[in-house]
Length: 273
Image 1 (cartoon, helix red, strand yellow):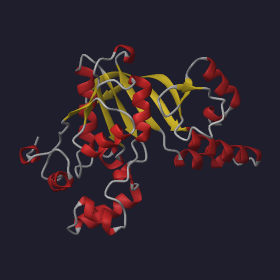
Image 2 (cartoon, helix red, strand yellow):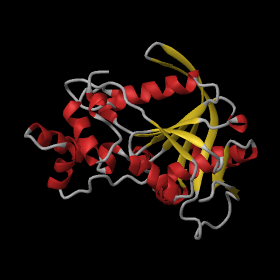
Image 3 (cartoon, one colour):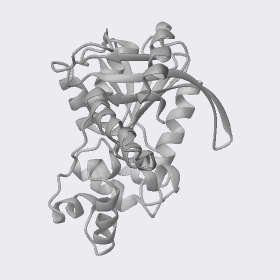
Image 4 (spheres, rainbow, N blue to C red):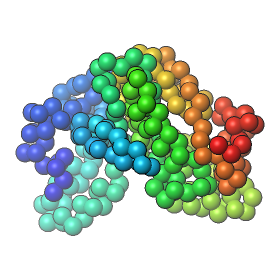
């Protein structure tokens, strides 16, 4: 049984303040209200103390699990059907289809002044497998290290469903084969009839509003589109911080394609780092 759809457990979490729902502006709203006019409402579970060890560095992090409320409602309806049909073995199918974003916070967010923030797109091959075809894994590791060592503190927002700039893992695997035939990462997307970048950063913007408001913050990114998207969702005082690490001979062509697409990288950045 999933605790987030069990009414009794849900009630306990609400009472303890461990489950909240926020609207587009990042404000807490009644979790039992009608969400017809709140298509961007997000349910958040946490904080959950999460001691972490990453590349030999210890971190004390507060983890928040976040899901779009419309998606959660859809899964709850299906779960009720499964429960009544005694199809509990199928619950794993529901879990695998949900996009759960994660927020990892270091420091006291109520005291943040211009914190460091990383909005990191999920990359199974880079973040988990340690693939050298991209720099995603080293970027994630470095962002945690930078936040830990920064006086202001900050957070990582880990965006589920962003694999391959939003095309998914299966299509990403196909683009890798096309890249091996000579196409760059953007050409490969187009060969499949897909957008260069189809990621949606609206949930990231809402979560930043909730945890930090609309105040100034430093965003670790080389991607101007990410800044433009967050700005379009109401975040104005964004200070870009170049975030590049893990450049090797194996991913230089990939990074060069990013540079040509508009990422704020220069030729010196593409040397091994």
